[in-house]
Image (cartoon, rainbow, N blue to C red; front, side, top):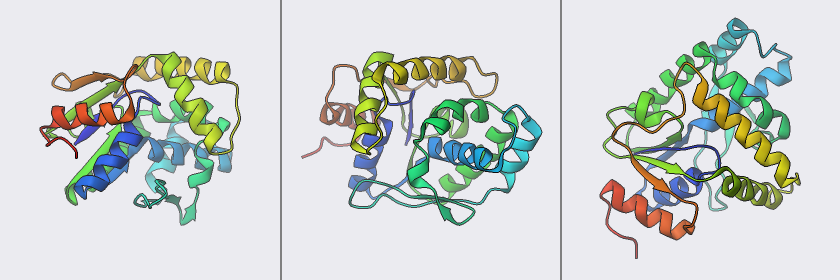
Length: 221
């Protein structure tokens, strides 16, 4: 199953729930791009140097763990668990710069397709249904207004102990949306045959039920 959508549209929460319910593997591709961004910042790589970023993405050893009972999935890069670092303001501000580099996307898409060949999974991202897995049997696109998404991200960060002004988060979301939609390689957009679900006025439970229906799954108990 491919679940796409902009940041904080509900992909992760829905994906976590359904992956546990169905016994599928969950692959959050956004965390992969965040991991490469974190590594570039740690190593002082010039984020305008596309060749350097491409080499970094191609050589980085990324390991994706599965969600535990607490809801979190771990991600390791070159053997180090960096999960807690991936929602930092620096990564938030720079991930779109890194993810728009064609060579970075090529390296990540190759790995993502490799995960898909290993068995049943739910893959989250921005170009899964349109680029990574165009033949996925179920394609969902979750959407929401920038204001609602900023409110969700503010709450999510606060629960993780990270306190940032909601207005600042909104500005960054709007900037990132623009960059993601305007990039030349794999822009953010629904696949032509995706089921689009607006989550603005829906609870998580309602979104999950709509995704189930769109994917042809039986209703939850």
